[in-house]
Amino acid sequence: MPSSSPYTLLVLLVAAERLAELVTARRNAAWSRARGGTEHGRGHYPVMVLLHTGLLAGCLLETGWGGRPFVPALGWPMLLTVLAAQALRWWCVRTLGPRWNTRVIVVPGLPLVGGGPYRLMSHPNYLAVVVEGAALPLVHGAWITAIGFTLLDAPLLAVRLRCENAALAAAPGTVPAPAGAAA
Image (cartoon, rainbow, N blue to C red; front, top):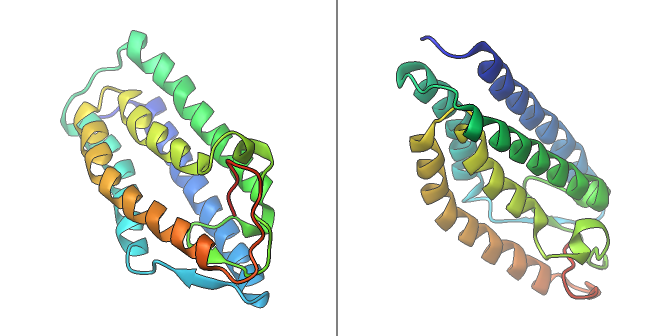
């Protein structure tokens, strides 16, 4: 499968970042559960993992077998967009600290977080997901993957947002934070 080595490296680096997220999430889940945290939305989680794995595979397959060229006028801005999405994601992780997770786990009684990117919007991590899902494939012209991921992610993200918002609203003793905050 011919593919651009720098692009393959980029996708592999994003995959390594995903593994770092999972390590962080596992540690944070233990922290949350030790404090009475409960998980919500387990049913959609495997679908989310499959879709995000498919995004990475689609990037490599489409550029390799589809013969997608690197178009600098599109590729370089999309690379910067991917990097910005990663920065936003890790800003969210650092802001939420041990409360950040790839799963929806809510610890009752904790106030919602209103700092960092959460002072600007309710779910900034999902903005990072949407932006990266379109931009990463487009770095190397994988437009089918970008469109496919976006179309499949939209309903999944709607389920995820409903789940997370309901879990936060139902958490006993959760203290509201200023507008634009999240758990």
